[in-house]
Image (cartoon, rainbow, N blue to C red):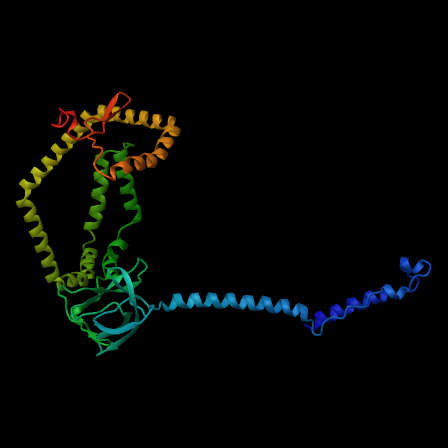
Length: 389
């Protein structure tokens, strides 16, 4: 900052030199009679602060602001990259036969909700991967809880899913290890896509595009016939038939997928059995379901008839309500006066009644006619009760 102070000092020196230049006109008050000498009106040159303190202060403020913004950005980035879990956590471990695609810092989720993170992955025993996870204190693991590695998105990012057991189970102590019998590497989508790789390499994009274009044209009636479509389909399938070696490679590459399904034989069997039981129950209740559908149809018809029958009455009541509202609006002043007089009237009525039964009243019939409609405000028995006969 010394050069700033030097520039400021040079600027003041040049200004002082211009003031001391010979032949310079004196100030106006110096030309007057009895005026003060010209030197009286001159200001003393402003001495710059040592080291250029004023520019230095602005620079320091800017530097501190920039540093603060950088620190905040770094904190946000660090929090995002660390993917830490808020609050107190508990640490557990789980053994997997394969953790392909799982990384340190990936989410641990229960029912789709993030409850922790993956803290570490290490090899144990040569063929087993041990995954250390930390979950929130409110998320308890039991001896029936399972863990499955699943895909988080199409980019291949994974997460560790916690699956509740069929039974309640006993809570695990922090640091416990979940065995491989209750863990699964999940379905390997990469292996499935790699299995179809030979087929994708054999098919020519031109043939597939031509077939798709022909299908669209035939369906839209823009030329071409079904015969030509079948010819192109036959050509494509003949080309595939000539590639029996490729089909064999596809089946070979799909073998790991099929083996994975074989390992899930019990789960598949249970799923098929439950689906069969569901379909059997629906088949047994088909009569009841059909009757329910018929009943719903009849209910809809009756409801429609009811609405149709009551529509004139509803329209008439709506018109009467509109008329009533208009009457209330037109007589708002009288209504306010009447309501204001109600406390006085009830007080005057209550005073004689407080000393005895001097006045007995029984309303047999009280009604208000609005828009041609009579609204009965009296007793529910009406004028035909025994007292009013």
